[in-house]
Every structure is written in C-alpha cells, then in structure tokens.
Length: 310
Image: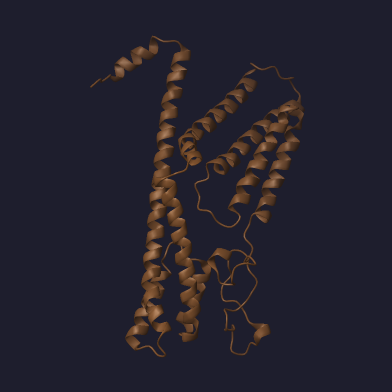
C-alpha cells in the first residue's frame, strides 16, 4: 500500500509551478464534489423509497378494515375502533395527499359510514399512485435506460462546473476592482454595469443550479418552475452583446422571478363538498362548502377527490 505523508505532499507542491498546483487543487475539488453529489443522490433515493414504503404500509393497513366495512351493514365497536385507529395512523403517512387528510378528518369528526366507500377509493388511488412512483424509482435505480445512465454519470460533475463558474466571476470582479482590467475612472455608469453584471451572473447561477440538477419529487408545476428558472438564467447571455445591457437585464430577471410566484405558484381548488355530502346540515346543494383547501385544481379527466388532480 502506497502512503504519502503530509510533509511529502507539501514538498511536492513547492517543487512545482502554479499551473500544476492549480490543476491539482482543481482535481481534488472535482473529486470531492463528484463524490459528495453522488452520495447525496443515493441518500435521497433511499430516503424517498423508505417514505414511499412507509406510506404504502399505512394505507394497506387501513384498506383492510375499510374493505370489510364495505360489505357489512353495521360495524361492531371493536371493528370501528380498529378502523379509526388505522385511518388516523394514515395521517402520519409521509406522502398522503391533502384530499386524503381531509376525508379522514371529516370521517373522524362525524363517523358517518356513508363516507367509507369514497374514503376506500381515495386510499386505493393513493396506493396505486405510490406504487407507480416506487416502480419508476426502482427502474431508474436498478435498470436505468441508456440516456439516464449517461445522465447519472454527468450529473455529479455539474456542481464542479458551477463552482468553477462562480470562481471565475469572483476572479473577474477582483481583477476589475484591482485595476488589471481597465475601467474608466470616475464613471458611475461603468461601475454600475460591472456590479449589475456580477449580480446578474450570481443570480443566474443560483436559479440554474436547482433547475438542472433537480432531485426533487415531481409535483404540480414542477416542470414549469424548472423551465422558468432556466429561461431567467439564460437572459444573462444577452450581456455578451453589450455590457451596457446589464442593469436592464438584471431588472428584467428580478421582475420575471417575482412573476414566477404567480405563474408557478399553487392555486386553491374551488370550494366543493365530497360526493353525496354537504358542508352543513342547513346548506343545500348550492351552498355546500369544502372542508379542505387543496394545492391545485383538478384536471378534467380526474374525479374531484383524486390525489393526482392536486
């Protein structure tokens, strides 16, 4: 086994020029970021699989008494208590939808047996959705396709590229402030362009990094968020045409970023009751109220209480 002491490393670095030292430090940084990113990806996948499995176990445990209750006209006190305990345990499932939480809370509040068939269908849809998500995650982990295999090798290297871009921007700014790059002295407009260009670069990198690396659980509006972030970051390239555009480009980027809160944000669904139920006894069909505010509207193809429609 080859072992090198710290003093030998220092002597080796002192004997070589700055180019070799820079290349060596860059290689060490690349290996650290590559290994750390890959480890983080694997840890997130394992945690995600664990959360999916936990949710499926809780849903399966609750579905069993619900199926039995669906075929009986009346439940005994022990059966009803068992079903209630397992339904309440589902509220702790990591991936239960807002609709599932609302229906469980509604049944826990009034113990209306008419809610049970709809609650059973909701849990079955939740289970099917999570099974599909688990199968997809397992396929990508254990038998990835040709393109995804290549992406898995490239993705851990991206943090190093972003770190290099950040160091380049900082070095460029230091050279300007140090006088290595000529700047018109006393020109407020020149310094404004420099600082806004630097701010725009940092802002673009901050948006582009999560948009490319991803790693989050897919949800409503997630693809739009990534495309919107990439579009805002791409506006930085317009500064290559003329540095004088920098203040205007930065202003446009900030405005588009603020607009993203409206375009990519979640919208509450319209108030509506569950099928066959109204919010209050005194309310008629036109006055029913919803007991839960969901995260997004439903698609036309999905039933009102479908978790996929959220």
